[in-house]
Image (cartoon, rainbow, N blue to C red; front, side, top):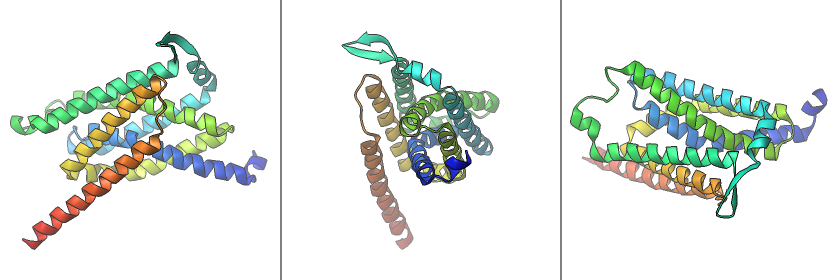
Length: 244
């Protein structure tokens, strides 16, 4: 282990994989932000922390059972001349769930159901709402963690480097998640953009499950570009309000 620590390649692998884990965790943070936003404000930070803690535990458990990951990459059955593996099934189910949740959330935002009721939906049954949110976060954590772990296994051979990268990445996300959540919840247009991003990620997961490999770089670039445009719109809108 000491020899490994003195090897520059180990540190290069650690930094590279940590950055990749953070990028792959963006969709996870967005999903946690959207779901935790449905809870009473006092419970939201706790839900985010528990969501990311669950993600960390899930990823470490998957890394510790590499034989399980290998089995998931073996074909289970064939559809339209494409071999469906266990990993493909997890991605397809996760993608369908993500599309469903994103569509429901977008429908609620467009129809202003909470505003028409006059009270938040989860008020008065915070315990049930909190449990539901955590369960949904944990379910999607498995999907995002599986994708992340498979990528890590393909890049680095050293298990300890993979685990260290996952821990560092999740710690960084823990520091950033509250600021990101406040920003997303402050601006409704950003929240709608985030939901659209999750919808796109869900479609991508289904595509990958059926063998259509879509580089995530394209998706993240599109999201980054859209976010930049929306930030310019927000800045322009704030400038006009200040002028008046």
